[in-house]
Length: 135
Image 1 (tube, rainbow, N blue to C red):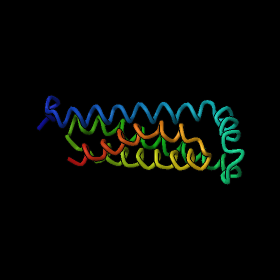
Image 2 (image 1 turned 30 degrees about the vertical axis):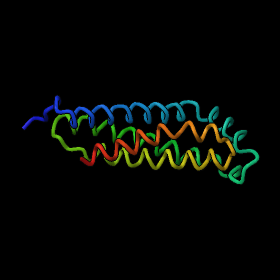
Image 3 (image 1 turned 180 degrees about the horizontal axis):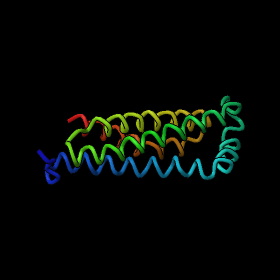
């Protein structure tokens, strides 16, 4: 049976998954395309923190997680639309939420409190996506 795309829950699942897919794929791809620029900025950002020696491995992990979260959400959009299965999108939303928590941790350790605060709306979107996709 085809998915009822006009059902409010289904449409919210689709739109949330699309939003997360766009957000995390774009961010991850930007990090791949301009890896050296991102690395240089982050090395300066973390220069006075206990994480200063871990910037490159952290950037690699965050990049891989962003691309994985975005890809899972993008695949999830198709799965929801054609079969009603939200498991791929759910995995993407959970990975996205974990990624935001990791970024939040880094911002707090770097004492960039404004940067950490700016991640809260993204966390709410991601966590809300997990809840919507679980329904």
